[in-house]
Image (cartoon, rainbow over all chains, first blue to last red; front, side, top):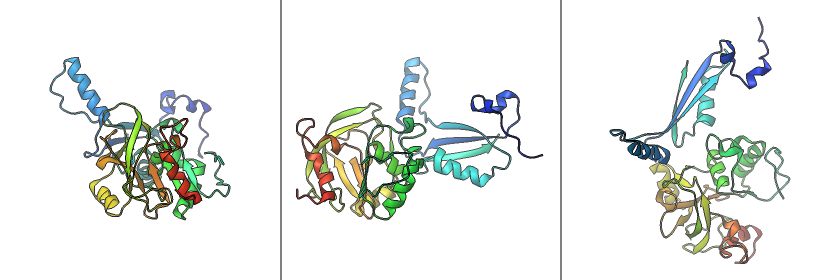
Amino acid sequence: MGAQPRPVLSVFFPLRTLGVNVPRVVVDVVLKPEILDPQGQAIVGALGRLGIEGVTDVRQGKHFELEVDEGVGDDTLATLADTLLANPVIETFTIRRA
Amino acid sequence: MSLWHADPQLHDVDAVILPGGFSYGDYLRCGAIARFSPVMGSIIAAARDGLPVLGICNGFQILCESHLLPGALIRNDHRKFVCKEQSLRIESVDSPWTSQFSAGQEIVIPLKNGEGGFVADEHTLDELEGSGRVIARYLDGNPNGSYRDIAGIRNEAGNVVGLMPHPEHAVEALTGVGTDGLGFFLGLVGVPA
């Protein structure tokens, strides 16, 4: 069976929400430890004002969920993460197939 | 001559200035998506062949994302947008963009950014300083958390320069803080300072 065209609806609704089982890849991106994270610091400050104690540090990162075709290999995913989703100068990333 | 992001043609220009502002909503990271615009493919290739390229503010961010310059620019350490008249010291004059200045010259031009903190690893910072590739440093206090007070850098050849403050807003006494920014542009056309 050849590749079927994706429904136009997928532009607006991820295929998964339409009940179609599509392979999913999760990429998490975090700042390297030596890079200052002003947004994380703002969150720590807000926690104090909430009355929550004991949280000494927060590092804010990015979480990407990708729907990919079966044929997309690990090398392609690594290239995608390394060149666009993360900036390797300041960030590291992890890739997992969900 | 204006170049358009969706047009890969450089139209035989002798130099390119990537202006400040915002590009592609600054989604993902500032400059991260602009880097892949059609015109940037041509600019990256031409810059590697020696075309003079100056990136100002968002343009600096795009040059870093393009890996034409090392390091990256992150949110200001104090988390606020900064907009002020900024004193700088010109550190390197070995670039067509800075050849009108004298080494150590102090100038004042506007600075306005939310994500102007220049960061790089220690090795890269040492290399930039050791090879005279820091072209300008902030004076009178660090306005955005940039490592080692770095306001601008150049590539090894000198034709590519990234600068966070805005020299183009200090070229006319009537509208700017002065005309200290002119030097960044006059060097290219061979006008004596």
